[in-house]
Image 1 (cartoon, helix red, strand yellow):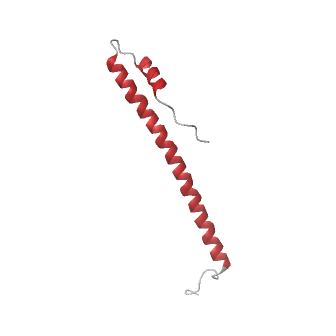
Image 2: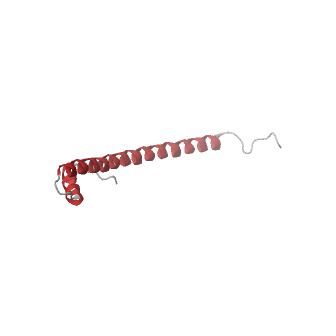
Image 3: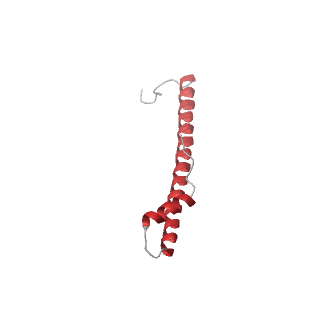
Length: 82
């Protein structure tokens, strides 16, 4: 009993292995999609901050809100992920 497998090898084991593999592939695809979307959002925010900082350097009277508005017109937001 200690040396016996928990369940007989065969079709059920193969189906479980394939099912587990498909679940892992689905999870990997999802993680790549989420990671790509996060990278695009991070790049957009970095563009906003960098551009607004450059705009503020040229302002005589520092106005962060105006600089951010101008930066938002310059930087292109990432496409929405659904």
